[in-house]
Length: 476
Image (cartoon, rainbow, N blue to C red; front, top):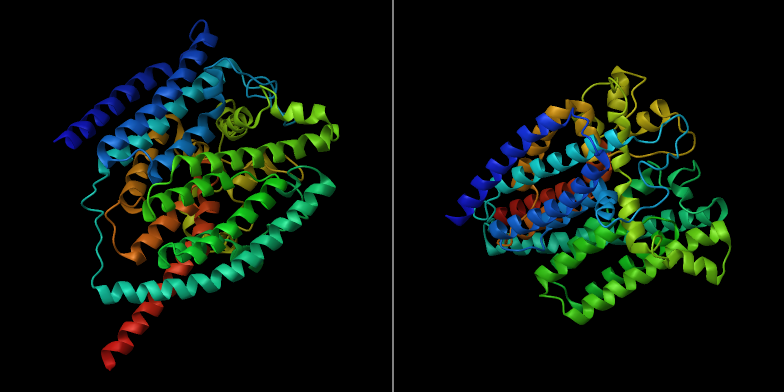
């Protein structure tokens, strides 16, 4: 009864907020700076509501869904969360523009962006909340024999792909780290010499994280498989950090959740040690960034750890910079992506862009088009965002509705319940969650392409081998 009541209140809240949003989105209120500060505080309240309401229905605060929605808030609203405490940087949205020809976002544009972001995130959450049902997600194995068969297949397949994908992943990121030393911090993001391009090595490297998940689950967290997987991931963290890539943070949080669920709760001492290690790694990556600009000195270290440039504050501002995508779109009258609905284009595009280019040779995915054509950036890109893509496709008033449906779909088919017993289903859903974590700061097409050539490919291979094994057994 309490679950039904909580869902009912979530629906009422969404309806009330949506009507308020319609009334306010085209307003230009007096003392708009105060409104921006108020909405920045509302961001923290929204985050707290997402965690609290999910715990009331799902039973736990720490889940794959709350990890996803937390990073969605950080990527879409991170800078505003710092503004709530009066923390500002000279390079923040509204104070600085790194793109020639793009004006600094006005206070009115920031106000509209905040309203849109809050309502969109709330609608996504309400969609996930209303449809979530722990009973419908209770998947049990058809038989102990089937579960044992899939366990062996997942173990063998993922062990092989882990070896191959580890070599490819280390090759790419060591190359990008070297590129970083010669061309500057984060050069892999912009340089044509980056090794992270679409080739067979890159496609194989995408299997790295799902393979780790498959090995850990199929070996039931036995000592040596755990040490090997965590050792490989630790090396990956260090190399990626030196290359300027910090998205390993949400990947590490997902692995932490799996460990917590499968092996048991992690002690406070282990959490403190892990947090301290992560903090040191982020400090080192920040130090590397400043050493390229200022040289190596005590002043460099002080700058990297200063109040306004320390890694924690810097992470909020860096992740929250994705909000700039929405501010640019809203500051442009009649912004239009010329190739159609990006979600529909992603269906053939997740296999290869050449299918779309066969019918339209000039086609570019929205991330590339936005950076290279619309913003005319040379040698670098801005990326894109989940909220920005919904806004481009459906506009200010329908985009939140679309995100409501996205929340429903992801809650129903992606985020697993604690009661899931089928190892095959567990591997598929958890590795899917891992590959979808970048979605809030990426295009739908790019995210789904990585999922297709990693989780889906492994799942198909495992499923086919399982059917072959069952067929051979039935013939005996």
